[in-house]
Image (cartoon, rainbow, N blue to C red; front, side):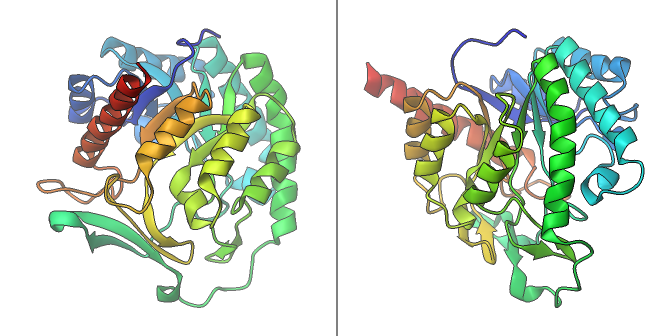
Length: 328
């Protein structure tokens, strides 16, 4: 599969169907698109159907984008994650999706293994700078946790069964699979175990396949919430050539209680992280993530409104341009 040179790439998460967000992304110079092509969003068959995925890629190409990655559950993954009857059929569909991605030269798949419940917040209208709205997770605001529906080791077993089955297809297709942390990275949520909640857990997950096609979607705010040494982890995963995708976001707080911030107002030195990525030869793709909802925007997709993303694109570009100047 052809790569776009040995350089860091900046992309945006865009809806699978064209709308004003596509126009704005192109107007600010974004060339790389990431999308979720699940049938409830695309109105088509899941991307295990070749023609469905081909048409998605073609729509992006017509508007000047290179579709670089699919992100999230592209069809119902419940039977796979929970180890239910029918998972082998779903795994075969997953393998077909990877094959289609390879044929269409879509080089990256961002996946998670959050069972039962995915991205979760207790509040999505917390005031941020200037009246913008951001999201918050506060475990203390949740009701008591019910009994687990399956154990942590059972979920690990389901993950191992799945990843060992699909990695050969990814390798054959030339598609990289970037594993995303659980969000929030806590041990259990709404009666389901969470397993990808620490650097040690990621090392365990990656060791199950030991494949050059299995790596990390480094959502840095999640690793920060875990209490991990983020710069050291970036260096480790880059050294091992396991860092495929970088989610650029920041939070204040811990895994038990945090809130999202603007990219320039959180506690992390984001310029330092971008410098570190460059110094360690990161040539994958990064995108802004979980931006506050700003004035004039509806708060119907918390974390994914467009104005905050456009601000983030300019912020990231400014840092990268400054780093180029320093290097001269």
